[in-house]
Image (tube, rainbow, N blue to C red):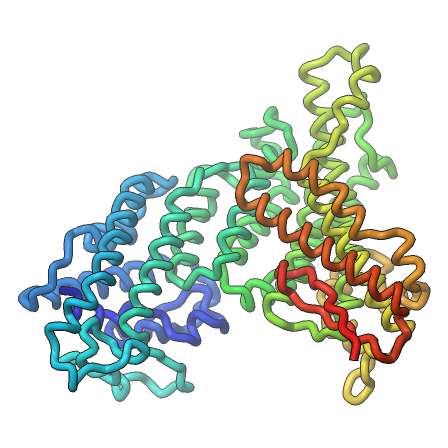
Length: 558
């Protein structure tokens, strides 16, 4: 039924291990239109290549479907329709509902294909069948007239790139994941609020999507320099500042800082759609640009309005917009810095002996992030109060309206986990030599510079150096860790977070993971305290069994 189709389409449609696993595979231009589509050349995220890749991908799919005619291959029109629809994706997200219907039909067909395997095997010669692990057809028989090395001698001289031809069953699973990823993109609400767009991209990246879904996501998000092809970057910024009065204001749109921030914002959206390695590399380099804008904004604010940083009740619109723009820029700068740090865990860039300094730096960055977020929320509450309340009601309602959202509480959990882990590791290091960094090749200071050099160059945060970490770590002892009990504090916050995120399954799953990390580390901390951190028989290791970024202490005795 589907034997010949998938055997002929594997190499043409599947990405290679190199393209999926890492390297500069943001968006690429196929080296050959047939047989080696997985080999892509890095194009430095030039947007025009996103649609080029999608178009070539779908043309190959059509060619594969067409080649199956006359071979008793029954293939309905849904995959064809999906292949025709995606390259012609309409601007501003139109046509996504139709694409979802074709995705659902394709998933149904794939399940039927998988069920047909037993029948196809029963109709073929058993002596010619290959195992399910290596067989590239449903029947297990080697495909007739198809050679995996078809274009190998036609490629231009270049370093070799691994092209792995998946088995028939793995190919089904690959297409199923591809369709699920496309379905998530098509189900996007097209929310123009930046505070919702960024978490959506981050959550989508958790499933490690392939090159094709990431290219489609970037095409959907950024069209003609606008979000979804309709929202200007300056409007996104004014909406984030809770100042709808300035949406469409020409003076605001033409402001030098707003124009630069808009360019950085569009670039950030593109970067977040790339693979993990490329994303971290580009985020680190962009920190310098964001930090420069922060410094320029701060100097301009001091020059025009003096040293006042807080939002005052009776200040004019220009002063209020300038201050809120500075706070918003600093908040997103620290958000990028935090994203840069946690991606290091996903790429396994940190050794266990470096976790102490990494969690300490995460704690410092998160504290700054929460500070800027709270300032932005206070400013937004002040803007709402100006519109909906009289001036005489201002003092009475101020305390009631300054409650911070659940996103701040979630960040507070991250702060407590980071501080607790860094202090626990520092206390273990001070009590024994098990977590001391060896000086065979690099000193601890050199490791610190190696991991945080881009943050240090961007002055994130200011006045934070290796010596700040060294002094903080030297004063950490197990008695202090038990006294402050950071992990228990996390458990106290969890119940309120569950109620706030009751309608968001992704957030509930994240909260559950955080709760497990806090519970296991609290128990491990009690055991270490009872046995004694300096006990030579004590063996403490850290594993990422419950969360991708926050480790769990595993305590054993030899």
